[in-house]
Length: 114
Length: 111
Image 1 (cartoon, each protein chain N blue to C red):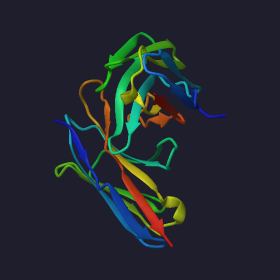
Image 2 (image 1 turned 120 degrees about the horizontal axis):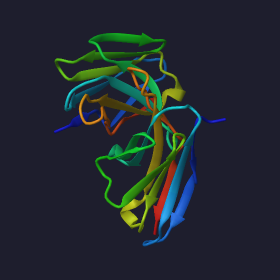
Image 3 (image 1 turned 30 degrees about the vertical axis):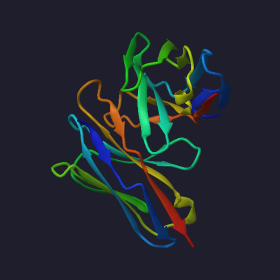
Image 4 (image 1 turned 180 degrees about the horizontal axis):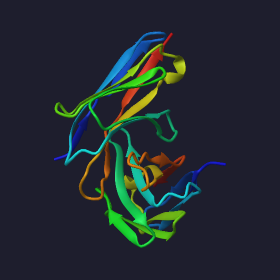
């Protein structure tokens, strides 16, 4: 079984709709992240959480919100989706207990906003 | 500001050696990563450098010069399956030790 899972894997929605992307991990890591990836722009950080009570904005948080329901779960919401939020979204985790703190990525959610 | 530069695309021949360069300007430095990402898939960890010098891991090696803000990933004995994007990423030492990713270098390996 995959250590970091994301649901759904693909989603098509309409402008103005509220949607939620979910991420779960079995790695036992404290830190979780949400990124979006656009062609030519690389991975950009939306939000990150260092533990259940800690939520921090990344470089492109406008239009997004998150919820850390448990150590293992981190959800990303688009309150009112717009077409320029069409992208590939990745959840990632890292282990606070290691100096290296490699990030482990989920398989991604491909979102299309019409 | 923070910036990571790497070439957009490279092409190399099966069996050859290719070097992918990365230069960075970041707020503090606490390690440089290389990730591999096949099309439509998740990035996966390749290497980590925090001290100057070369780290070798099988066919892949990564070099770091902190004073120059420079790293490279060296891939030897190229195989067709090495066709992928290679992401350079730098972890800072301020603001929660966030990691900044470059846009990636798309490598095409031809027969």
